[in-house]
Structures are given as C-alpha cells and as structure tokens.
Length: 389
Image (cartoon, rainbow, N blue to C red; front, side, top):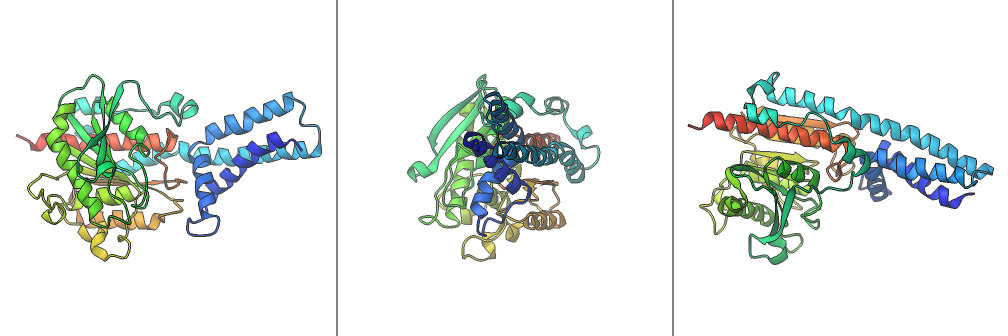
C-alpha cells in the first residue's frame, strides 16, 4: 500500500464527502465535517490539482502503483474526482443564480438605473488566475492596509484596520466589515478579505475591526463597539480618502448578526452610550453566512428580526443552502420578513452547496458574491446621488 499516496487522496476524499453531505455542526463528526468539507467545497480545483492529480502522477512515475492496494487508491482518487466535479459544477453555477437574485431584489432592468461611472466599474467575470492558482492569497499589490488603529478604550479588542488604494482617491465610499466567531473568537484580518481587497482596489475605503468578546462582554456591548467604529469612520475617514456619507456595514456569521443590528438601529441612543449624538446611519447592509437568532440567553430584542421596520436600509443577504451551522431556513425567514416590511431593496442570494464560511477564499462562489455586493452597492449609491440636491 503506497501510504504517501494514500494520505492526500484520503484527505480529499473525506473533504469531498463532507462537502456533498455535510453533517450538522452540533452532531458527532460535525466539526470534522465542517473543516474538511469547507476546504473541499470552496477549493475543489486546488484540491484536484495539488492533492489528487499531482500525487497520482508522482505515484505512477515512481512505480508505486504495483499492487492491489495501489490500484485501490487510484480507484478512490477517480471516485473523489467525480465528487469534486459535482462540487465545482455547483460553484460555477453561482454567477447565474446571483444574477437572478439581483433581478429579483432590485428589479428587472436594474442595471439601467446605475450611474454611468458606477456601471462601467462593475466586474463581469471572476479573476480566474486567482481562483485556480492562488485562492488563499488574499492580498493585492495596489491596496495598502493600515493596521491596528484604536477606535475605543478596550485595548486590542477595539482596534481596526483600514484598507485603501495606494493612490488614495478622495470621496471614496466606505465598507465596514465585522468578523465572525460566535461572539467569542475570531480575527479582523481573516474573513471576507477578497471582498475588502477588491473594493479597496476599486477605490473604496474598507475597515475591518475587532470587538469585545464573550464572556467578558455581552449584548449589546458588541453592537456598541460597531457603532463606535462607524462614529470613528465619520470622524477620521477623510484622512484615508473616504466620504463617510456613503457607508455600508457588512459581517460574517456573528459579525453579520451585529451588522444587521447596527443597520436596523441607526442612531438609536440606547446603543450609543456616551456618544449619543454621533451619526451611526448606514447606506445599506451586507449579511454573509449570518446568524439570525437571539443572543445567548437573551430575549427577542437581541435578534435583528425584532428591529425590522419599514425604514430599514437596503440589505443583501447571502447564505449557503448546505450551511451546517446556521440552517438556510433561518436566512430565508429573515429575508422574507425584511421584504414584507421594508420599503428598501432586499437581495437574497441562496448559494447552492454553500458552506458556512464561504467568504474565506478566492473561490468561484465567493467571487460571484463579491460582484453581487459591488452591483448592489452601485445601485444604492446611484439612488443616493439621485436623491441629493
């Protein structure tokens, strides 16, 4: 049995199995399923090239396939390749599904309502080289990161990073992103970096922040921290070329929960102790692989669902239909409730085969979502321009 060949093939086979049939996170094998399945689900091409095709070629070249055990591993690699093809096919279809979701949420012909300069800047195809060969490399040479700026008095839990184009254009719109981690962990320099770097490369000013964590902090401490970030951007954003009159909030998982709460409680003094007069309004919200329920042991007021009103800002919600941590039914329910009540556009993107943290890598799935976010914000910005004197 060629053990050196068996190991990478088994690794990909297990990941592919869990990508196709993920185990709910709360069940036995849930954690194993999540971590193995996530990598195979979002990086099927890298898994095929580096862990199936290359090891198979080396095994044949070195004469390791000279036994029944060796051919059994080859057969496992072949079956796994078929599974990866299914995973890849689902991801390649996301762009069409995302376009359909934009038409549903923004209306047929929404592109005609875009300002010419914003429409011209929209990307039409994914960055193939990055997706195929550098999916985990999330930096851009034309984007500068200014790290660890303080926005509050909670030390390292109140720090933010600013991403901006090296040319530092003026009048840039702002995107603030909050990481996930069940409110008890996570890092600001981790999730949705392909989104932040792409927008910064297009002239945006993007911000990613840490916030106070459980158990030392409880709701609404995290929400207060996000509102402090918004207030900081309104005060200091111009130093990096920002025009914070156009400001979007986004988040992943728990960060999405927090971003939605901030968008639905704009300028609410109850969540702005000591800075009640600060402007914490937002232009829109982006809710990625979010959590929609109540905060740990607290009442319904700790859920975004409790704060939906007719004057809610525009929302883009993206969720995977195979999310093993937050069932997709919760995302559908939130989007339906928002559509029923809010007068603003609501875009709901359901990702076929999407796992929970689909925003970690340059994948075909997340790049389709990145382009949807840019299109969604372009329409909101066009409408804002039209409403201003």
